[in-house]
Image: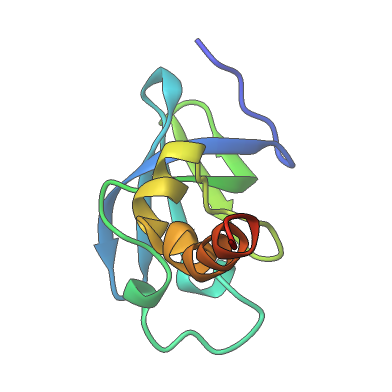
Length: 114
């Protein structure tokens, strides 16, 4: 069973979103809450602008309740989004190819001039 400590950066899956914050599920059956006040140093108009249901993110532990397996978490001042190569490719689609195509066409034309 994982042991969580204040200051740790943990990874969890968003299981619920409310107006006051969102909930995460971590390893070992621990749950966590990121309260709206722990999302940004700036005004947060809507929690939904920051997070999506079932998204896997990173958060910083600010309090641990081992008895109830509950963590208080923060995403202030950390890069909480986790993106792997596949997610980036899916997000960008063919955009990088579309951007480079005109350059490649010109290069081809230059090489094959008669």
